[in-house]
Image 1 (cartoon, rainbow, N blue to C red):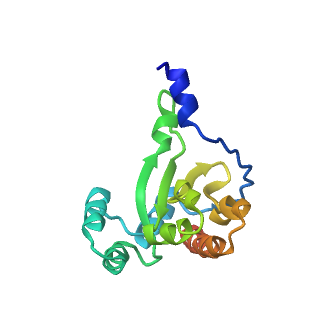
Image 2 (spheres, one colour; image 1 turned 90 degrees about the vertical axis):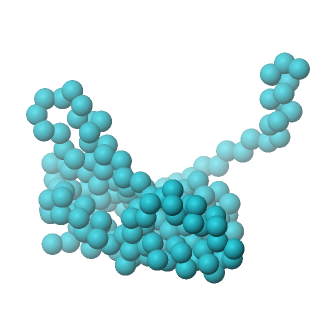
Length: 178
């Protein structure tokens, strides 16, 4: 059977959803290293491979919840990944390039609570935080989860998303503050 015929059989329906995103940007006059250090201290840093293996080995939600809660920082959040974007942006440029870091931050339990109501949530969580140096200071930028979920019109998922937004924005505000 030709590939084109197979693909027609596999694709049942294609949906396109328009999403309007709210972006929060906080400007700090602290040095980039100090901002990163403050965020680093407020979130957990688990070994992701070990966490996934340990979570898979749990027998109940309560066991998984206890495992995850031990791995989060004081904010209830953890770092999934840190990408040094500045290293790529600056490659081959003369002089010092401003720092730029993209953090994937979240909590699998929070994602689960949203995804129970809106499965697409799993494509938005963990959230992305961009921390980069610009002429006017260090920018901490975050796209609100509630704005991603608004078009799904599910109040239960939105309540969890708004709570996540408050946690992330409190983290960024604290890290940016003198």
